[in-house]
Length: 223
Image (tube, one colour):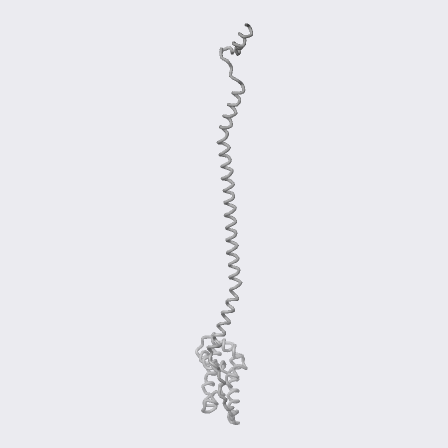
């Protein structure tokens, strides 16, 4: 009878001082660990999203830099090709212009043959007159070369103009003897430092010097 009563009434749990029965330790540990995992899950998700966004941003920057470098390299390559082909294109254009110019140029015909001019017959009288003209011109130009004052240079330029204007009377009429006498006059000037004297005449602004320059410069540069 005592054994059956013990099975029918199991021993009671110990009570705390407050009179309550303490909860099981295993149940409390499982519930606290589950709540801790659930509370950390959003933080882990947010951290993973942040790391993914950072990686995507880095990937975007790398791809952008790579594309810029590719575009820059393509522009440089295109510029180099254009610069290398520019001289060739210019050369081809120049050759084409030469070909067109040769094709459009008229055929040159040889000039008609002219009979050789007969030698100028200068008599002893003409030679003597030219020698006298040269002697008078040298006398004037040597004094002009040795003169130092502006007044003396002006007077000698006036005298040289008078000698030049008397050439037609000295050598006689006709264009050939007059031209020959003017050449003799200019040769006498060149023997006495003609270029320097002409330069001094141009700088002096003297009317007689200007008149001399106007007469001899066309003859000097045409012979």
